[in-house]
Length: 368
Image (tube, rainbow, N blue to C red; front, side, top):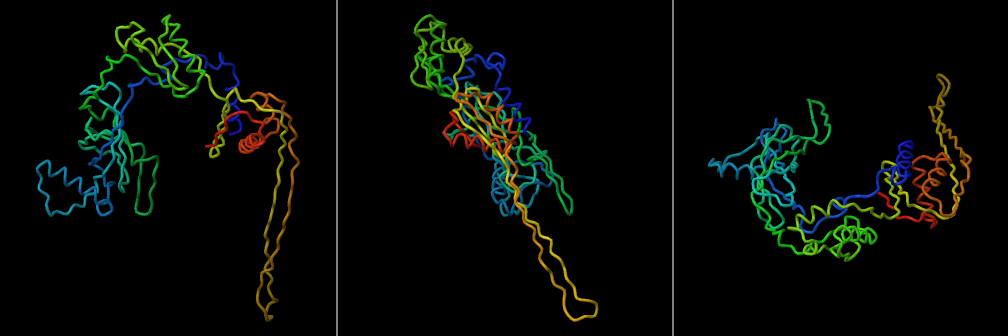
């Protein structure tokens, strides 16, 4: 783990040109106003499971949707009792991409909502997918590709992955298009995924330099508006097709991100610290119980007793040394100093927290 942490940090130490960060296309930095997807959701039924479906008594909604589907198909089931184990109620989700046209295909995800054991090998029955406005924009159907596997016997079972969820590639067909006239736009806003005044200023400059006139204007740290008429392009699509290919060097804030669960530490190359000294040592407390049984002599009156025996000790290992980091130290000095202490990834996280608490770490500190 420690070697992995150091490798991640050393990659970040490389100069911009060597690490390959450099300039980034505008299409990778921002979203265009109106060019967005729409989330879809539906409630359906999966059939054809090998006895791994919902228990009808534990999931009565499965029986209800199955009854509705059969009645729509002309099957009279009034008063009948269903106890199948090869069906499961599921939620179906997907995203309608921008400018999707009727007849197009989209990928969908299927997740069990009852007590089904697995969706492996199941088939999703025709399921309408609704958007936030309640209208149906797509219908889904197809064979599920589950993301796990399960097996069980009379006295045990084993599960690998998540067999109660899966995907259907191109499993939904678009039935309704989003009513949006993109060609009528006279201006388009660019929304930066990471708002920053410097980055927004650079986006404005590179677009204006490309057209040789005032075409783009920064509104705030996350928005740049583009005057489509000033570009003199045939349509907004032509203008954005050229603008999204322009490259800008994004500005980023100094940031340290740590994941306590995995012990991962990621620090940007702009992290700076003030003059600070770091020392790390270990304190070990040991308590050992070794009870001893005492028995009376043979044929003598009495009973066996247990005598407690406790050994307690406190060992304080000497510190690995005192490392002093000068004011304005960069990431390379931080890594070299902590590495010289020989600390583990967990200890490194605690040290960074302490440096931040002391006010010597000049960066945004994020703990996940």
